[in-house]
Image (cartoon, rainbow, N blue to C red; front, side, top):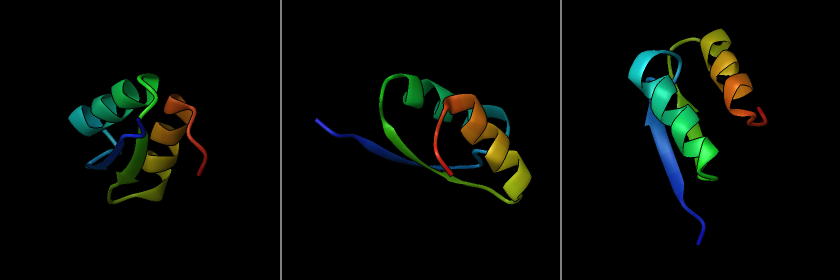
Length: 50
């Protein structure tokens, strides 16, 4: 089954932690936040493509 999550505040804190946890469980995640640089860092930590 494919699961997708849209995560707001994914650039730091709880949002980043949730994004990393879901990515490790093979969820498809969409990262939303205020700054591209922090979202890029979250994507790097999860191994996601930007």
